[in-house]
Image 1 (spheres, helix red, strand yellow):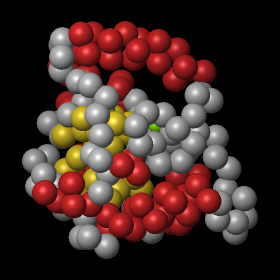
Image 2 (tube, helix red, strand yellow):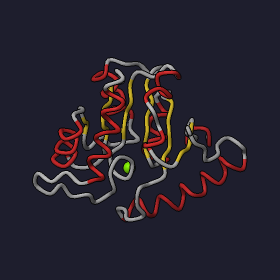
Image 3 (cartoon, helix red, strand yellow):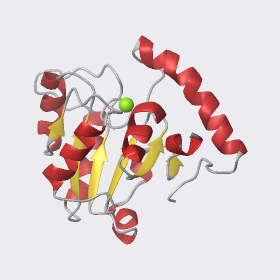
Length: 180
Ligand SMILES: [Mg+2]
């Protein structure tokens, strides 16, 4: 039961992940969470301004896509915001994904023309990103959330998430590690 919540890897930030690391592990497709993984929760798109955070996220995604990796943003957030940000990043996105339900994960595989064996899911939440991706047998990378400011429901879930991560660490199944 606990295994269902266990990520393949637990790191601090997406920026530690290099395209070479993924390609060497046989990865061709990346399902990427948006809020608190790629950009901070509550991030507002101000007209045409590209902030430093946005530029850095875009350049990281670009480093993956230019290496030949497919990327698809899968977010539970509202379509208008998700689409606007995905357009800036230059990758497709699925909004209102209903994670941890399987549907959006499977749709992302379809969009990227990848399979469960060569796709990884990267996100900041155990109960949506990791659990959802584990349900269809994907590899997963859990990253630390970019900010503590979150939707109230998420803040409550974080308490249970903390307990699950404690249990996973106790069993020696995960430890905070690094690609560097
Ligand atoms: Mg998130």
